Amino acid sequence: MGSPLPSIPAKRYFTIGEVAELCCVKPHVLRYWEQEFTQLRPMKRRGNRRYYQHHEVLMIRRIRDLLYDQGFTISGARNRLQEIVHAGSSSELEDDQEFTDSLPSAIEMNGVPGLLIGTREMAFDSHAVRKELFEIRALLSPG
Image 1 (cartoon, helix red, strand yellow):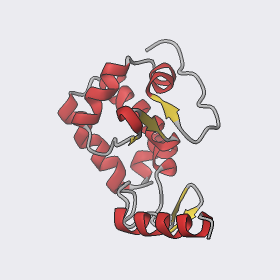
Image 2: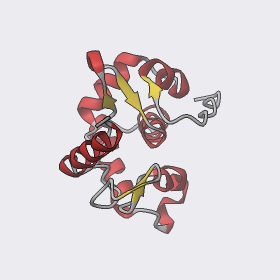
Image 3: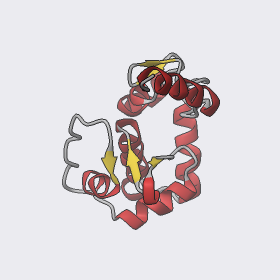
């Protein structure tokens, strides 16, 4: 498409409305893409409000590029995105470097060591996170 996308501000979380503006797509499109692309899993809070992180905004921009600019079908874009994630930063994927560099590593995510297991799959160990949250709560609770 003709006009460049706006720059992504240095924030930890983005609402669906903010992501829609940053990626030039409508919120209902983002909700649909969540169903079609398993890698796209924003955090949900009260009332099912979605909060996206920086790497998810970059992933949405990549999906948008594949679908709108490169003419991929949903299935083709899904396959290409999986290739990009699994290939990491190989030389054939240099144009995807910004996207692959933004994916969380196995060691840390947003400065929190050990939050993720597995590399570049954006899946976290919910039991470990839950345990850590309980430990933090115990430290913060009066008593």
